[in-house]
Length: 349
Image: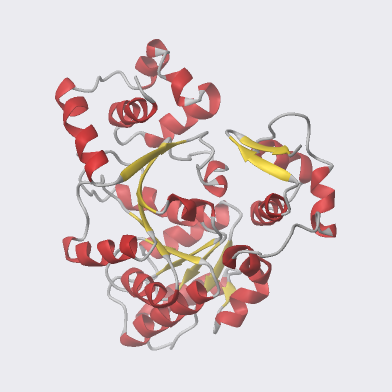
């Protein structure tokens, strides 16, 4: 069984239990090793994959340009890999390199106000122009405005709550095509045949925040999926920004609640750059010859052991926040001091 077929087989077997697959790959991976342990797989998910599905979906995945990336693969997103409920498999259509790039999530209300939509478009455009990948959920309202804004000046990534064969909402099919054509990507943890469902959206939100250095909430009601994304981002150790609004706008109440709870105030792109300005050179690409590790990253090298060092080990040894560790690792990789390998990072040479 070749690598992609093995990945598809596991994805179909685990269906909507992608976090369970992620845990098994963390503990018993890589894919090529796990697929040879049918008893272990059967204990985790007793059901089998119908032969019809195994025959049906490989052609679809290949013809539509979807790639399967498993937990533990070298191109699996490093920030997402730190989550205890990281997806076992990602289906990606578009540029998979975006999974490694500095991302900022931009989310908010579906029934957004005109001011909220304008803010989301402008922030999406400004963040993308600085080189950040703007990540959102392809939903109506703020999500769509964020994607649209990012497409004007850079790239954007959309995380879906359904399998790759079912785009939701259907009216955003053209937007999804533009995202991919513009150098962006669509991402889902669900295999073909999985329709959108209410329970999938909070799970989708953990991926949006988990891929991102921080999450920006533009408008949100007091009970909303956007506040779930913000809570998940905080639990993941990521920054949370909220855009203040009129006290007369019900969709400002969620943002004001976040600000009372300690979220970062966001009025302009400068507020984001104050927190993440060091990532703009990484996002835009750094030219010239490597000059060796910067002083900020020299200390991290002391925490490298021989062989491959995974992110969990480096987090524990260094004591750095996730975002700072990711920044320093990216700089060391650019400087040619470390290399990314399956399962983590190693000193080069």
